[in-house]
Image 1 (tube, rainbow, N blue to C red):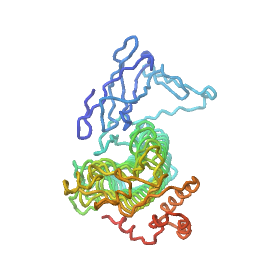
Image 2: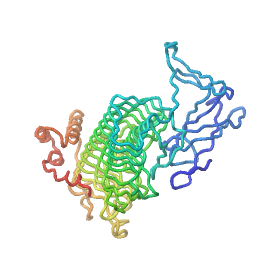
Image 3: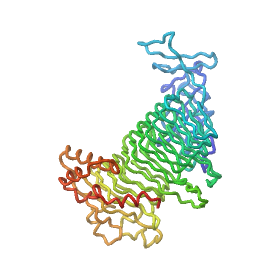
Image 4: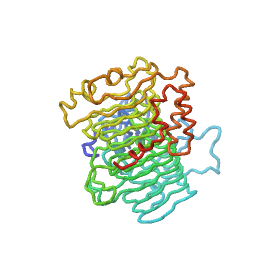
Length: 560
């Protein structure tokens, strides 16, 4: 293995590969520059290596990796599945090409039914960045600009932006640094070899509105700040950015650890009213807890994690504490502002773990009034994640409602209240809708307050859980038995009921609850909805859905 720096630990990647000739037979005389695209085990990221032929025998060839492997921050001594390019002997499908660097000849396999004509043009991208805006104010780019044909940047120098799993190149087709009130509006970013837009270092009040991002080698929009170690009081980060009304689709063609929007050492970003679909990894990734104050509101995010495992429409980490001073008042606190995720349609299909994946150490997220579909769990609190609030969400066809894979600090527990949960029909399952960490599921004492006085159990109450049988378990108990335990965290007022037997009625219920949640705060006929709910047997259990008491929202919208 080749030792390489990365993150805050010693980073290792494989140093080469042995290829059976029966799998891929590469003709060395028709090879100029081999590149291996290799998945990390568990498909958390992919590595891209340049390689040289090393040795061979009658059955195998071995290759040494000479450059690359830095496209993710989580190394591994082994690789997963892979493909190779860069040899003329591999050309076997229309659209494939091979550049023979020694003879300066380009070989292209054309479609037999539409061969090249003298009028056809071949575009060879050469620039890693197309436009740079540096040290400017009130610059507007667009409408009707087209950014296209940036060369691939996956083998350019990468860095680890913060404590998450990512490694990135600090470049994009459109590069903004030290700008104020810049706008990117009504433009198209298409067929790019790397990232589309990056806000690098200090940027304030940048607006990215009404654009289309499609067929990208990397991510859509990156926000990547600069700090002195863990101290961000130099204010050299993107802050108060607006990403609104954009269409993101088909991203991460080359670098699989890519997202529609990714933030590292950045804060106070509003992601509003976007349509995001078709990506290999998380849809929106918040790489750290720097500053907080991010708002993710009224977005449609579907078809994520199409090629990787874990994550989902939204992912976050918070492994490093930062002094961010998000309000710029000279604070030295490391506690971020609350992040807010509300009124989104989040579909955790393909290989997603959860609609909102608050991964390692994530803290201070208020998640409410979202329509969430599919996934292993609705809420996730993991590795000391604190102050994760989920309330009034509708979780349709999940395996579980909430999982707290972490001790909760006293005064900062995970909260799961007044949610409606449709559990997916899983053969031989116990319909477990909630599970807690270490002993809290027993009598509240084993590993609980008697032995860890500074720890607390999650707070659950008032949830409606619908299953095929009408029964659910919590911590291994039937819900009614769990509520009868003499403990202070026994999930009061939550009820389990049977889903409608008629599939049409079930679909109607799912759609109407989802519509109600997503329309909160907009013009919507609540009287019509209330009349419809009165026909359901569940009306008393989701009274919060049509309540005119908006004090709940005041609690959630405040910074806290």
